[in-house]
Length: 131
Image 1 (cartoon, rainbow, N blue to C red):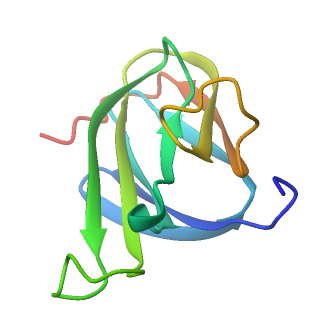
Image 2: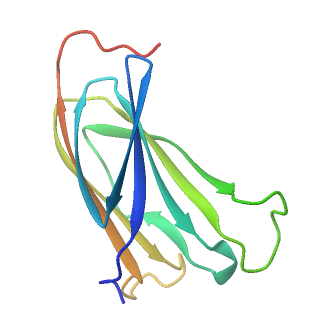
Image 3: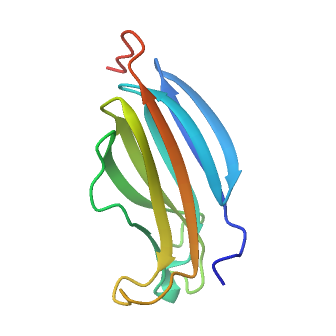
């Protein structure tokens, strides 16, 4: 079932400017140090499944936050869809592949239902501070 297409979006924040792009299953993103970006994927937590960051460690980016946003104000409605977000910051020059899998946290040895990949290239291009 992991061949199923997965649509997701990435919002890139560079010099306080936001750019959103939509992808399917895989993407490549060019970043500068201090750029921030958010990966947003639809999920349905009531099923026990969620998106899980598979990377044990990352050298070029840092996970700043992970959140779940509801599509509806009635958060506890059975079968409701949510959006799961992963917010990262580029911290070091280099290349990295972020792997997100859709599975149940307690089923560690089972193949994920779905997987997405985000290939990153981080370059040191001038002062790109977002603060």
